[in-house]
Length: 304
Image (cartoon, rainbow, N blue to C red; front, side, top):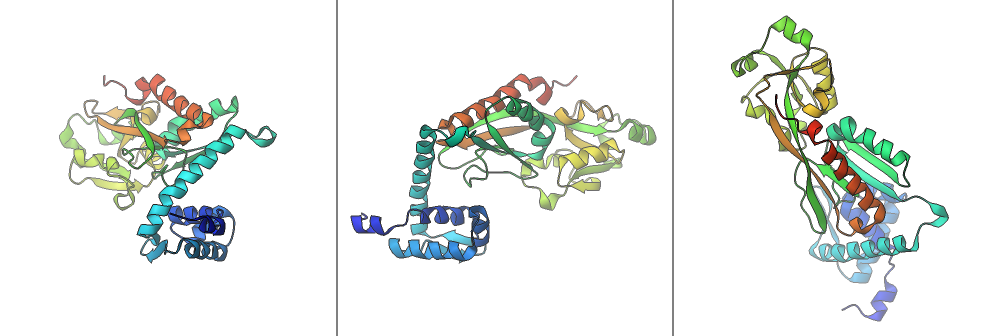
């Protein structure tokens, strides 16, 4: 058990540097986050290791990795951080400053569905939003986001997670493409057409590999890391593309091919158990859930 002398010798501010390096894996990334130099971050880590009497990190292939002692300290440091945030929340914000909530979401749902709804909601509210919409998954555990929306079910300690919504995808093409190539009336014709899809080596989740449900190999002539670029390529008549119905069904430049073929995927939403106690995070969480509940017919339409 730490004695009084050890507690007095500990610079509690050093835990901030420790947490940043543990999450970022690099001194330079942690320094950028904390708006200081990597030299300062390294010095603060060495000072903390001197006080606790143990190495907290080792250099590995992925950067700075926690030792066993570092992992134990990390759990307690996170607890201190959560309690501090909650304590500051109860004191209110100086000068009437608005609380800020960071939302991390994959770019398909983010750019083509949620961004406009969040923007309209926050315009009339008292919350500031950081909206991270990328062709990758963000995580709550790494503090990339306060609320994260992912294609895979998130795992980790202290998480609240739930299924946000199912969504459906179909095969789409432009009318001009189909007029040029002729109608597609059965599944066996799909191998005869050029395809649009993801760059497999850069896929951030196996949930995007829905093409394998059609055939082991398709002739891809246009590949991209984003669903937005694939959408535009399909609208331009490049070929066939599997697109979310909530994006493509509303686009007059596209038509559905083979209505009986449908793919179903899921969006999960998660937040930290303690962050969920913040009013701003809780309000944002319920707004996102309510949006997807109201728009269930858009996100997962029934095949005609």
